[in-house]
Image (cartoon, rainbow, N blue to C red; front, top):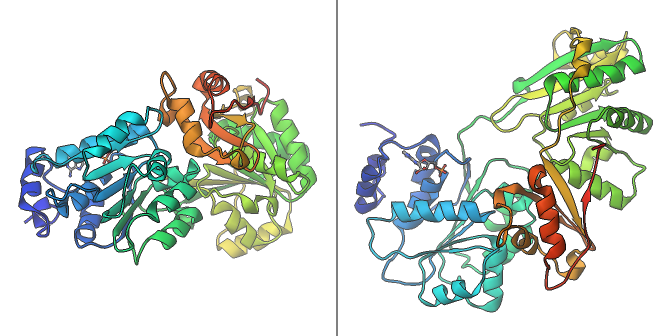
Length: 465
Ligand code: AMP
């Protein structure tokens, strides 16, 4: 028998199996084949899965398989970053549950009135799918009880953390029974995910279907230049030729970070300098704007880049070789999104003794390649996909990610997938939105209220318009 046939899953209820074939699901997708046996056996599972991988069915079949229809209480809770995803997940769960009569799936998301949700909750539901901010609201109002939940799912966990939902997730999970199954799906595994998994999961089984990057999957190129000015021109040539969406340029001195940033800005790039001279507030803002993709280039020293919580850069560029080969390896290890190749470009000065040290360390000769033709400089600098809005209220004003998300995506608002990272500090907050809806988003936030109050909102511009 085909090993990836759903029918090999002997722990799955026959009704669910029969329905799968009516849906045309015959064989399992790789993520389903890798995770379903563990999920059906009741283990906690961390799975790497993106939209399109079949991840929804993987967790949905798990929670449906142990559902007791007669018990009309919330038995499963699925947390999603946006309303669009929550709607999609609810739809898929309903399709998979067609063979079991009377299963109630309720979607609870922000951006719409809470009253009708409260009314629906009075009739009871088996499965709740929603966004963390709104679920937390219901818990505070005691309109939702989670004490009978047996399965908690965090879908697109990395994106939920990006949007600032860490505290909300922890608060919600703390209201579910300790004895439960927890499933976590995420496209990437930054340290924040590991930390939350450690807190809320019990001996999780790790399922990875795509190969992630290692140093073999990083494309490395080296370019020799005659002097500093030629080096700076080489930077622009490489940026225009490769056009990476997010790049860190590593320099060895503070002064270089400033010179390079100024040169790039003068040539129309969105670049920010990160060095030890920045005040805390400017440093926070710089990291926020780079991480939320509203600035595409960060020019940093190694020390200053330590706080950078990004391990999926499109490219790392070394502006001259670091004094220690280990630093080189550490720098380039930050490039490469899951499943795609990383790019490490190194510009070096002639006869650098560090070259010899580095080639010994990485175990092969380093050959200088020729730079892209000078005509490349005629090209236009790439634009970052997002814009940052700064809000003059933060934690001290009790502003939460859900409030901002709700204000942006509420009636006549922008779509949830046009909202990027949300960062909340003590006295201010930042939200990234798609550049093409930035003006509408700015107006929505300026005209609307957060926590019943109006705040000042401004667009943070980062490069010559
Ligand atoms: P997802 O990655 O969960 O968003 O799912 C992607 C799409 O694949 C959805 O439209 C599912 O209905 C469909 N799908 C999921 N699992 C299977 C399967 N084993 N066979 C065929 N289609 C599937």
